[in-house]
Length: 176
Image 1: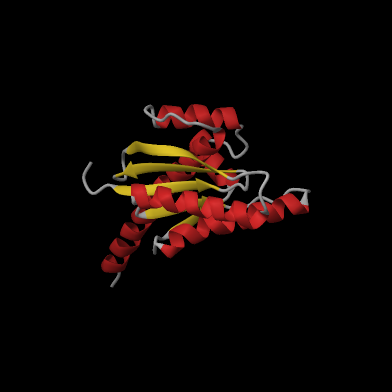
Image 2: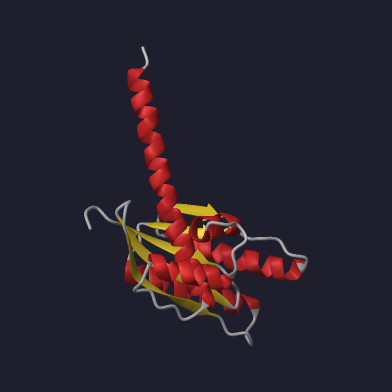
């Protein structure tokens, strides 16, 4: 794969944070690894956040991604659950930021639309499409599959941004 870029997708959660790593050269997607970082439900919030931090730090150190993509928080009726998810998401943003990685953020519906073709696809549809796009992928959880979907979304988004930049540059050069 010529000039491949390694992307980590992160699906934040306080109980389980999914991660998925792919390589892409713009046209191809290659599965590298995926998994979940799990926090201990019986521990304090601070210790659980530390467990997520340590686990994600180990993954990034081992796999050396060049870019990160993190799912945005969706707001649900349970304010306390949304707040805890936001704290786990803060860890998911902090770990790659401390390594100086560029971080993109994607809404859940944008990820579903990119991978499934509709903004309201279910977990089963996401797993099936990720498996089609990355046949060698083996997930330990839906969180890992979702994280791979986030990485795929970022890979596709990078391609569109590159094409837009090329078109703008060509138009600027052609203008009198």
